Length: 78
Image (cartoon, rainbow, N blue to C red; front, side):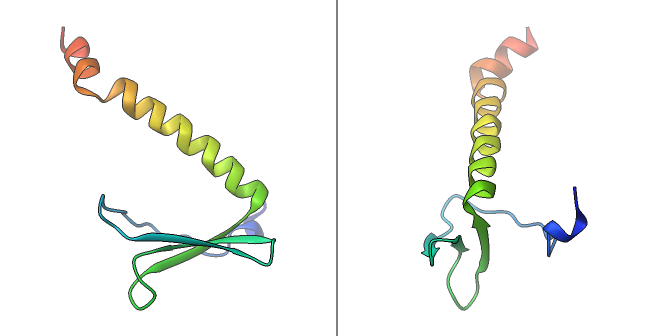
């Protein structure tokens, strides 16, 4: 990966009740806001990057749902 492709590296946790919004900015970027404008975290994706993120997130949710749910945890204990 070219290190210039990522401008800032941070970590955050998004709680279940966190306010979320988005905006398509001039047809080039999709801006996301977690929290509110005064005390939130905003980031933007190019369309192709957002598609890759959605694919990765979908796979992560599949693993979460199949390997870390109650039935899966009970099977692992047996």
